[in-house]
Image (cartoon, rainbow, N blue to C red; front, side):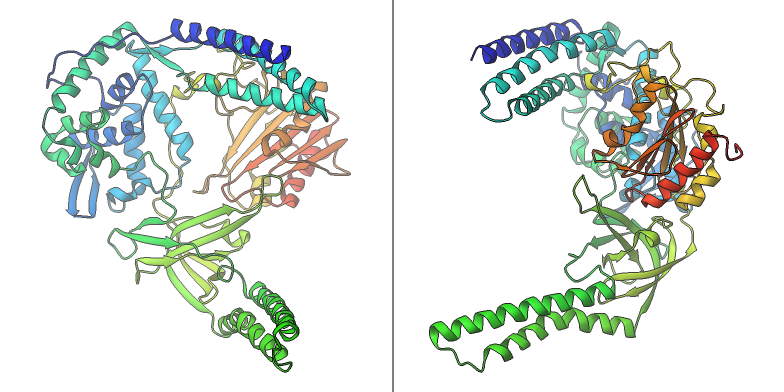
Length: 622
């Protein structure tokens, strides 16, 4: 009981410390100004930031697009009750970096300069990275104007984290002391859970705060909000109404007053799995996609036949068993159990077998545009498995059922490709796909990072690295191409040969995403696929005894147990999507991330063998 009391006291003191820090770093109070219709020079995205407690909201992206329309960089027109179009125009004035980011995305999707508003969520971009780039560009301008600043510094986060460990340890000790069995294990688990809960409280605190000037400007815009909300009915205005209301509609969207317009411009939202937009046939339209249950559909003929035979066996057995029981209990005729069992088995197992045989005898060819490519996880975290689906728009129906396919067929495809597919229609399975026209609007998104990506702008306290590098220390050390460095181990040609995807020359690791502590002194390099599929390969190297961290990096990233790989360097470990090895020079880790899931283990081991040979000087350095 004493331990629990001590833990409660420590937790209370920690909460008091957190409250003191939060109070000391809070944003200034915003006093709304008088109602006015006059617009200042701040963009809608900036207004969204400073009037939303210095948190950038999803409305900022749609508001930016509406502002581009009001300024003539794009044109939004309503064609019908369910279709509005965005037409590209040449900007009349220079665009801010985040405005150019939105404009470039619209350009990447447009066909002949036109894209449906509902299709703005489409594309092959990494939405998480796209949003992070947009957010940092907005914050960079806000700080340049003196409207905001970083709320938390690393020292404060270190103090809070270290202080949170005290009540967590005490609570773990209390559980260990009172547990009847395995007190150490129970206490360790309780300490970890307690630390996680306290960290969650820290994560709720914003990572940006306003300045006195920011509060003054925010107050002015709150006055604008009061004026716009006074009766103009912006909430029901469509996006095309920007031609009437101009920039006032864009600012109404940023201030949370134009819900209909914002919802119709899903630039900052992920594409819907079941509702796709297609321009196949020349006119933009919606395609509704369904994904069948894999009980019968979405499997190759061989699997369907085997499942049919298995279903027939179990159905027949249980019907026979029930018939025997009924004969003994209620006097059911003895001649019926076997015929009933055979009939039930034929009905249950015969259906997939008949469908499979019919499909084998008459495979169909479907031509159309790929509107959805999805890989859904079916296994658990320790042994993940994936099912792969493709939905085709052939121009004949607005409701389509997705087909199943293998990972090998799935990998080289891209949403927007024009294809000819050999399919088993009844089973919903794709045997092969021939690409007859590459996607014209799914090129890799340009993030146009001209320095904003280096900005330290965490969304909350939890994103500030406790043991991260200081801003004065470069995130990447020189010498990546030196012997043993990440650039000397693998080349884009090696990656293409192993993974079947084209890669660029590689570059510095994105700031803030490095999964390594600063004391490791590791060198890292990221290779990104040049095609529309967002596949990345991260190569990390480290020398000395600290390189042992890289040997377990795969377990930390995949949360799965590793498998030793004999005969590869001095030691090697294989995890889902990650392979690590020790050599005479130190250690390295290769992490492959793909939306289709981890690559085949043979591909990872092959890359590791090349890296070991180059590290040990047994292969020419590329």
